[in-house]
Image 1 (spheres, rainbow, N blue to C red):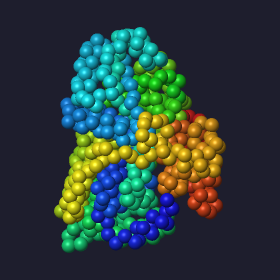
Image 2 (image 1 turned 90 degrees about the vertical axis):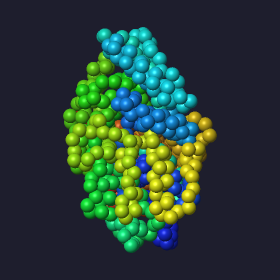
Image 3 (image 1 turned 45 degrees about the horizontal axis):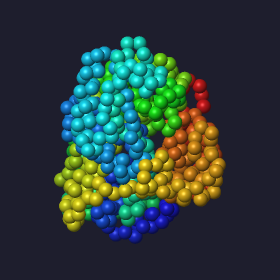
Length: 515
């Protein structure tokens, strides 16, 4: 998929049925749903797909044990149903995950046991296996390295894990499979109005500066934490609806919890839960909930957040990780529904809200990865009649996503694997810390719209999130391939390499030694 061909298609299309702003989970879910209904569909992303929140999650597809404790039964039931659909529609990206909760107080054993049985009941026919009580011996066997002093046993239950950025890229590919168009690095700069209604957008190509005036019958604002700013392009007086929250994560060596089971810590000092999840051959620890009034494109974990995660995990592990053990530290901003006035965010809803302005702009706030498909369906249901589009039902409940292998598989490329391996460099691994090959870099550029070394090492492959220091070391070799594939000059090559090195340094925040 050459960028010039995508821009040529954009120039030649006089009007789109549905135009979506934002290439994160929600926007991509909307685009897949709209394109699957047969509407001409365009998605514009200002940066790269899943550049923001959608590549920085806790990597869980889950009903939300914490939400159950908060009494949000409807959200949990809906999420558990969506979990089942994702396991069926993307078996190469979403996998069952066993969780174990260590119990140190008998009351917690009873309370959590009852709660997780309710979780089983809500899952119903979509259950991945019943929760069960574990003895002390079974808990230690399931969680080698867990603190045994005072341990009363544990509780095991089932949920699912995934790779968030890879699912986003898969959704983008699915948009093309369904006849839609998605373009990254094409930010929207203004909304177009005709007779008081939103009738399209103004946008420009961030790479070469070309400006586009694009007509659409209905426009969907899926801008995530930046959705309020887009709403105010339509109506300067539109009140803020979001109360953004930062969630931080750290990645350490799997030796600190050498098991395929994930650990759930049910009580933290900020009233949340903390997860320790086997992911990409490492151990992912998180998350936090820190209100933020600013909206940086590259949020970094605060020092206090890293200390909080390490301290909390350390209460449960015999050999707890320290700052020098952090291989990558990253943060994402959650678009939580609130007053927009700041304050605590831990208790704010993870549900979503769909808003329609007087000018017909359809905006969505809130939501989470697990329910992205349902959100897309509901948003397009709202948008279609506003654009005078023919009524058509969503088909995404049973729609296999791009690369679906027809069975459970661990290869994120799914049926694209032979395509990637047919490219030059299939046997040449870029760096010993990763599985990334030269051929996969070429595949990311030729077929997955990667435009930079960051696109490859952060979202087509997860090197930056796995081991930031090693990713910085691998950048030069990856950049050589990127430059050759995209015909970049020396100045752009140096610029991209330096920018990625600076970004990787930020992800190394948890380690004391320089890269």
